[in-house]
Image (tube, rainbow, N blue to C red; front, side, top):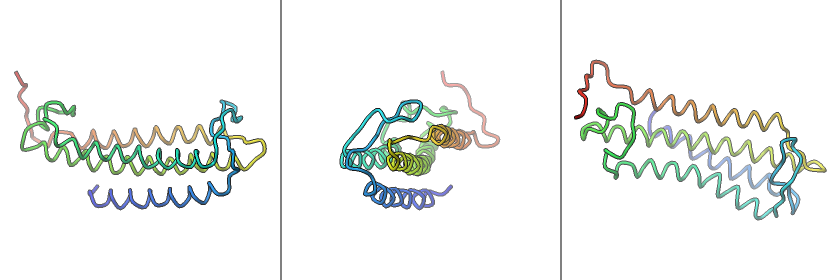
Length: 174
C-alpha cells in the first residue's frame, strides 16, 4: 500500500463523515438519546449540539491522534519502539523504513476508524428517528465485529510488513 494511497483513503473518509454527520444531526431532535442499554433502550441523553461536537471531535480526533503518533515515532530512539524482529528493524539503516511502514499503517487504520464512526453515527441517528429511541442491537453487534475486523486486519498487515527480508540472518543481541 503506497503512502499516497493511504492519504487518498483518509481524506475522503473524513469529508464523508463530516457531510453525513451534518445531514443526520439536523434531522435529530434537540434532545437526543446518546447511550443505550443492552436491549437497545435509551438510557442517556444529550443536547443535539453537545452530541454533534462530541461525535466530530471523536471521529476526527482519535484517527488524527493515531496518525500524529505514527509520524512522531521516527523522533524516538529506536530502542524504545516495540517492533516484531526488533533487532533488524531498529538498526539505523532499517529504522526509517520501519517508521514509514507504521505511518502508512496509521493512515489506513485512521480511515477504517472514520468509516466505522460513520456507521455508528448512522445507528445513533436512526435510533433517534423512532419514538421512543431504540438502537438496533443486531447492527450494534455487527459494528463491534466490524471494528474487530478493521483493527485485526490492520495488525496482520503490519505484522507481515515486519517480517525479515528473505535470507536475512540475525544474530542475537548480547
